[in-house]
Image (cartoon, rainbow, N blue to C red):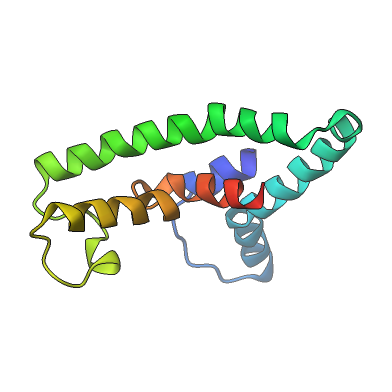
Length: 129
């Protein structure tokens, strides 16, 4: 977790030596290490008692429900306060004029986690589960 925090907190610096490049790679690649360690501890601690449906229902209740509610609140703020939602040019090439275009962009935000930059991991983790 410290590598992930450091990777999100670090600033770019000119890397000259091999050791600086290795260190930067370890810090910015911390999510991969975190996923590996999480899978290892999941298997070690929970696998003997693991049941698929109760596990998935808990993930839906404690991860997807808050993610969806917070994403919808963010989308409402974008619609109310911004003329054009962030990343709209990625999801829709035409100008946004109708409600169904906002709803389609909203579905794509939920699908990709693009409502906030830090949300990318939540849909990815749910797809993996």
